[in-house]
Length: 430
Ligand code: IMP
Image (cartoon, rainbow, N blue to C red):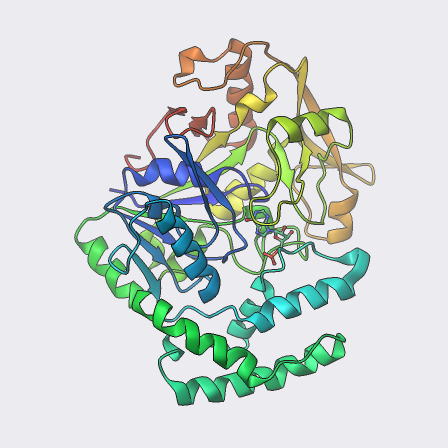
């Protein structure tokens, strides 16, 4: 039985939460392997809305194990806040149902301070980060000075590490004109949170190995999207981790064969939050309408998302660089009622046609989309639960997208409700 990885195939916010939740009914374990509480996943289950940032989406389902892998950057305060919120909604969360890799690096208050100070200093060139300290925390991990969850139990080690960390960060904060930090600014809150988070610490790679050998089904839950990948995205307007499914193994402590099927999620159109190139962005009434209908506001920051037509070139690129086997398309209903619908099938750059998005940031900002125009459909696709319930034109649209992106649409989601999903093939059975 193949384990499944679910990743975003655009710039995040593709509706992964619902798909992961839907698939988790078939899985035994749900694992987050990258990112942190910059992600925003909304789940609607029996009319109840759950908003998750750091916790794996499987956490709201009974009898599933949820795991935060070592590839995540872990804010212990955000973690406890989210656990408390979800518990207050009646969900059973405990170390028996939720484990955090003991080698996960921590996001500390100094990281969000630095994230915000840097963004301020960048002015018009800002990346538009979520301000959660994700980038600075990953920098510390790679620079080998991160404080990790396993360090929390050892006061002497912790003190030494905090001193070393601040020796570095205070130089940066001073240079940026931001307030410097004293060791107690980190040590006191860490001492306070330690008894609450440490019970969740676990040797996750061992747990996963045991589960895999016992034939359990594992679902890897990606955050953000392929175009925000640190290597393959629209650099430097990206997040600081590998968002592609290749990271599911390294970010959880399993080998490359751990993932059997990669499901990419994309909307039937495109959105982006934060700065950076967006070839099919719409600045007109159509863009506004898509944003209103799709309720395109960020879960984490509340920011209005930029909206545009579906970019088949970009999604095809995400499929190739991320090894995506099939696509789950979400929010098709947002396109209901349009007279015509456009899809980007190529780019024009300096008089030349391109079938890929070049790596150079200036070129990415200059490419112009080449569109194919489709006749729209008047009937509603909302809530459709079978292929036969869809208007013929909508079926044509999906089928043509499959050809353009060179991958099958395995799932179609027609509303935020869990059961409003059309299954073409089951990723776990593939
Ligand atoms: P960071 O991850 O906070 O460093 O932000 C870097 C970029 O990734 C910004 O453009 C953010 O808007 C974007 N980003 C981060 N997390 C998400 C997400 O979950 N959905 C969509 N965009 C995100």
